[in-house]
Structures are given as C-alpha cells and as structure tokens.
Length: 323
Ligand code: FAQ
Image (tube, rainbow, N blue to C red; front, side, top):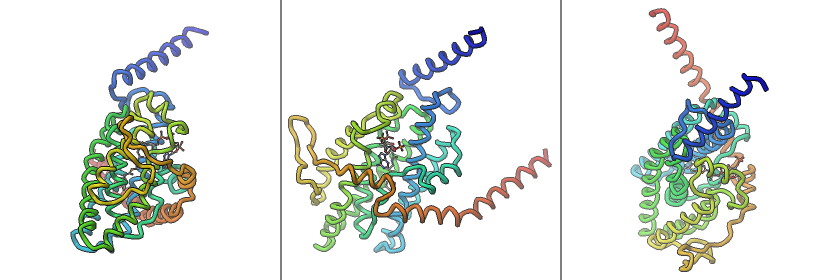
C-alpha cells in the first residue's frame, strides 16, 4: 500500500468517525455532510415512501370532496387533502437534498418499484370513513411520526415537525366529525361502527411488520433514523386509542383487547400479517386503482411541467442577456 492509499484510507476512516460521532451526540446529519452510502439510500427509501404515501393518501378521502354533506364539511375536507399534498412536497424536497431526482421517484412509484403505505389501498365507501381516517390513520401517523421529529437527518426531522402539527389538527377534525355522527341517528352510529370495524386492523398494519420480521429496524435505530421499533409504536397507538374509542362510544373489533395491569399496556390480538404482505405486494383492494389514478394525474399534468420549464428557461435566458 503506498502513501496515497494510506492517506485515502485515513480520510475515509476520519469521515466515518465524524459521522458516527454526530449520531452518537444526537446531532443532525445535514445535506452537505459526508454520510455512508447505505445511510443515504435508507433515508431516500424512507422519505420517498413517506412522500408517496402522502400523495396517494389524498385519494381515499379526496373521493368524498364532491359528495361531502355540507359546505362546512367540504371546506374542511378540501383543506385537509390540500395539506396532504403539501406534506408530499416537503418530503420530496427533503429527498432532493440527498440527491434524489423527483421525476425519477414519481416514475418509481407509478411503475411499482417504490412502496407507499398499505393503508391507502382500502376503499372509502361511507362518509364516516373520512372521520375514521382522520382519527385512526392520522392518529397512527402522528404516533409514528412524532419520534421522527428527532430523526438524525436534519431536513427530514424538520419537515416532520410541521407535518405533525398539521396531522394533529387532522386527527382532531376526524374525531370531531365522528363525535357529531355519534350524536346523530342510530343509522349514523352504525355507519361509524362499521367504518371502525374496517379500518382498525389496517391501521395497526401501518406500523410495519412485527419487529422479528422487520428488515430495516435494527440499522435504522442504530443510525437514529427510527427512534422506536414497529411493535413499540403499535403498542403506543393501541394504548392511546382505547380510551378515545370509549369516549366516542364505539367498539374496537378485537375480542382479545384488554388492559394488562402487569405490563401497564393493553394486550391485543394478532394482526393478520399475511394481509399486510398481500397489500404491500400490490394485491390490496385498491392498489391498481390508486396507481392508475396517480399515473393519469401525472400524464395530465405534463403540460404544466413543460410550461413551467419553458418559462424558467426563458427567464434564465433574459437574465443571462441582461448580465
Ligand atoms: N405499508 O423493515 P421494515 C401518512 C415495508 S402516514 C407499506 O419495518 P422500515 C399521513 C417497508 O417499507 C403513512 N410498506 O421497514 C396521512 C420495507 O420495504 P422495503 C406513511 C410497508 O422502513 C394520513 C418492508 O416493508 N408514513 O401518509 C409498511 O424500517 C392520512 C420492511 O419493513 C410513513 O411512511 C406499510 N404499512 O419501517 C396521509 C412514516 N410497513 O423498503 C393521508 C415513515 C413496512 O424494504 C391521510 N416511515 N413496509 O421494500 C416509517 O416510519 C417506516 O418506514 C415504517 C416501516 C414504520 C413504515
């Protein structure tokens, strides 16, 4: 080994040591900092999947915008779905700070090479689903994402702060809608219960596979990308949701759900992990429809992207001539 090789090796070791020290001290990794390739690709993977989830997540509730039962409910729903688009944009921007190319991320989503959350592959046949998505799906998202505000990658952690604030608001609006329905007619109460029955188990699946089967958790915890395991967050969500269900007057569809005083947590039944695997691998009730809608929207929007690029090029030319 010659002197140049030794210098290069020492430089690489020093950079890795610097990276590990930053993580150990709970400081943030920023875009210009050196990072291991695997840390970068793990961050791009998680942020892109998260961004895709926000964008695909506009569809199930968005389907109710034209059919909301009042102007007030329509305005609330429009604002919520618009917030989700905004979350997608913050997250795609965070992925871009890692060198990811946004059109390429979209192409990967549309071609099925990149995932999005399983939860958005379920249908929304009743208006109560809008409330239940706010309560349970945004509730699970907050539970998962509040610890991500302390994630080690700076732009992701900062995006998460704003997203969590908005999602807390979404969760409250969902709960308020359900409270209103529960104070309504017997048919409305039945509609809420039927919706809870359909969304409860898929909401628990949002936290990912059980720890023993999770491929990324150990490394992501070591890098402080994730702060808790999938099972820890799932448990936290169950404990948080049980009293809310009682206050609402609905039953969570799990005969094994009960308080365990010894553990200081609720015990709950086994999630159907084969269903999660099926939905993740593209065979959920609405996977094909969700991707088709996203593909069509992307193709319909081509002229907007072309016009924006032409405008930017023209402005750059003018500025170049003026300089
Ligand atoms: N669905 O080893 P792990 C929202 C994949 S909230 C689909 O445990 P990891 C707000 C996983 O990616 C929803 N795929 O992986 C909203 C991996 O696949 P890969 C989005 C899943 O990363 C509310 C493989 O299985 N939130 O959008 C799922 O350590 C209302 C092995 O799993 C986030 O993305 C699943 N449920 O932990 C919008 C939060 N679970 O990449 C509209 C950030 C696992 O090897 C309306 N993400 N997989 O091919 C995370 O916290 C993590 O990535 C987990 C998964 C916890 C999702």
